[in-house]
Length: 388
Image 1 (tube, rainbow, N blue to C red):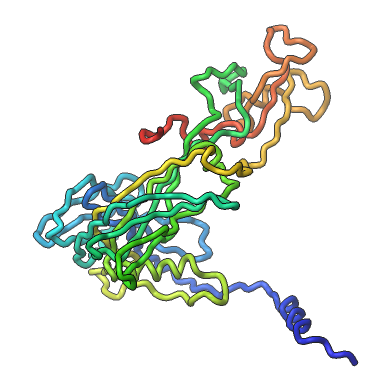
Image 2: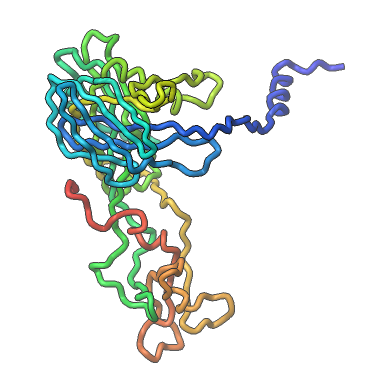
């Protein structure tokens, strides 16, 4: 009897031991308060309140609405925030005094009260530069910064990116939503738009083990070469924060728990420490960590002529078909189906086919789905004020 090599046995073992795993989830209905945001000393402050959810719950966010949110300092001053949309509370520029410490007080609609520790205001040094490297698979964006006083040591970044994009097809016609299709005025074009997105990952770095407080090419994000973001023009605004060592530890644990999981070699999830406390119930978990500071920012623009000729891809499958005024055979779409406001389709171009339309207009229209024709479903036609 022949012996099977060990490596073959291992391969067979791996291939035959794959089974679907359905974890037994804790079915507790407890939803803990999540507090996100920083108190800004040189910009508007935005605080988001939400609740945790079960892993198997489809709803993305449970916004905590109708709460009272107040910034306090150790000198007795307080600054109430206003709820500008569900779960988001804001206040304008406060020009905070660096000689004071600050905290956040939250009272939810159910009467529970939450309070953070007093936190010092830390000012981030200026960003030296934001740069990019065009790689074969995409564009890597990085930041350079330093602190001559060697006093920052712990950094965090987030970013807002905006890009110009276009729909798959240029629409020369539109439906009036009542009874007919009309030629589209230039002022109502829906081909070119602008979209904006914000970062969702934890981006941090530390220089506490280095002799000098210098950060060189810290990675911020990578834009895939297939992305429409870089097809025409793209801009990114990077915002830099200085952290305390405790805040850095919080973000470091959060980064490991949310971004570095998925393989057997990753570290096990661990509990993040919060500087928020529930005054109504000291044993209740609160998710979040308050920081206070003056952020620094820097924006760069990247145009297509600065990059290799990437093969960008439209994010939706798009096909062009034809609708006829008088369908010559069964299965074709009548033009009337493009007119209703709830139609999933939009006209693209007019065609003059025989027999001629007695009213002189097109006898057929090419059409596609709205996501392939109308860019305003994903963006705005007007460029932002900072666009150049």
